[in-house]
Length: 187
Image (tube, rainbow, N blue to C red; front, side, top):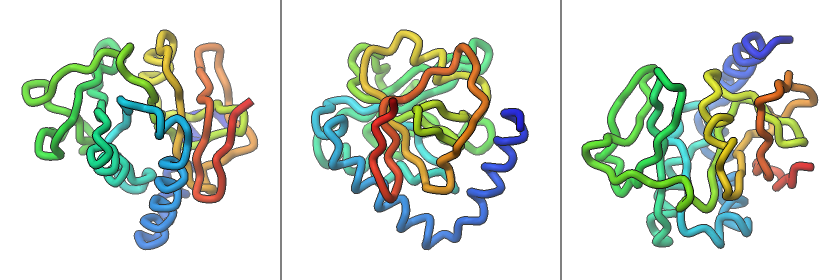
């Protein structure tokens, strides 16, 4: 199965999760994330603003604020297929962009330099135990991770863990995957 077919299959699978199950699994994943060394030691966490049915990151952003962490949220530059991160201090400073996604408004948020980010929570649709992931297409995160020096973690529902994902030379694996059942150190 190629990446495009697998993306379609994973999106369909995620859309079958009922809201209350989704909420509970997201809560369990967030709780496990908060217990990781990556979270505890991070001063600055980079994370996307989730869109249902992805693992809910809104509660993760709130927890980061409560703990005094700096939260950096990505803004896509589609022409260059690059990510720019901005410090988010209020959900009111987000703007709706393509596909109904929410991103930081550059006018309302300060830029975050990649070297100041301690951990990036890397999104995806499917994940292998090796840390390779199927992203949403576009390769934004793989480009960003090429030069990123910090730690990488992905959040995944059990349904997103896969035996096999097509891996290409430019794909960069994450170091840990946190699901509702486990925290997996990727080898």
